[in-house]
Image 1: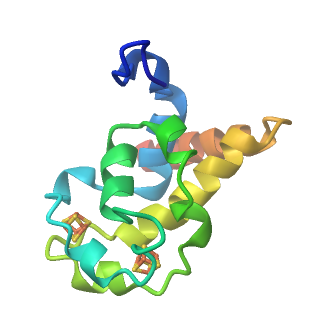
Image 2: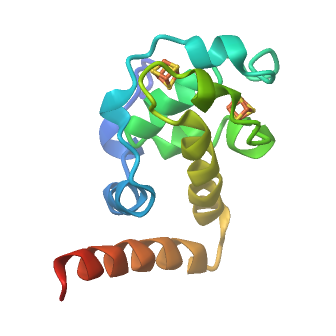
Length: 132
Ligand code: SF4
Ligand code: SF4
């Protein structure tokens, strides 16, 4: 979401509950990504979606799911794994794209069931790890 001046309004774009569930459920370490773009150079689909999957890593790490919803990447990624194989930081962008497909489904699902499922699974994982 952007302001009238065209500046990204982070406060309105950040979905804290879904973001926390996303991190917990998929165990992605966004700090590992150094935005080197090696993944873009090997992704066979980056000609179709510019910046794929580096830009998706950046947006997902910031929790900007509304911005990702404007991109085709989660839907056209065919999990060829080239990006993850070549990532020098083992940040596993292919896994992030697969996870984003589920997160985007949660955003589009008008019943809210997918969202509740993801958040519920993340909570169950936390309970299991804490032994409660
Ligand atoms: S995911 Fe890996 S290859 Fe892609 S920008 Fe981040 S560190 Fe570089
Ligand atoms: S797994 Fe997806 S993002 Fe990664 S290189 Fe293949 S198509 Fe591109």
